[in-house]
Length: 299
Image (cartoon, rainbow, N blue to C red):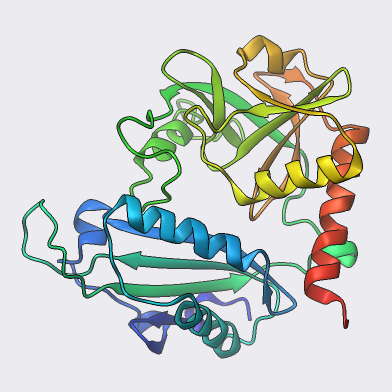
């Protein structure tokens, strides 16, 4: 199914056509971005790394003091029902939990009647037989927008307030509105490279896989975490640290990670050619093998 008008959403416990999938204008997710979400991928009907997504979702809700009262099993059932309603096995899946409708005051009430929405759309098969969702390596540009510091908004929280990333991506447009790059690379307030607007950054220098530390203002991406695990299992040396832009520009290889892209090489950063390479290709293969084993293996 590819026609968005024919899709079904899961809204507050009910499967509804996309044209009827609505939430109140008084919902705090709409008013304030007062909501948590997770972006996931279904491979062969299996949500990859589901337990990690649930854990991060709960961490976000804890940071928001959003006691929604839903179990992981309940949320997973809603996702499975959404995939079935749309006849999807390989899909992009987004789960959102808002604080729901409350009086129009900024201070949230502790009692919550949450709004829960599940959205799914088709993506190509993953694993060893899969096709990439991206056509070519990414072009990236550094932007003036800085990553919001953890002291202001918890870096590990995935909330509906995505203004930071939107402002970063808006910088990629030129005067006539054309988009000049696939991803905006942001620095923190001290000028250290942090992450992309919707991705984590990796680069390779002298055979060492390196990535900005989550001790800084960096979202601990689940794909990022899996890549580091795969590198450790394969004996690829890794380092998490603080880096200047020059460190990345001088890299032998570089790639971005997120749940949709998986591992996407960086063709150019600020018009400097970088590209993928043997480490990127090796880790991409290992990632595909894990997806194949976990989600498509009959055993």
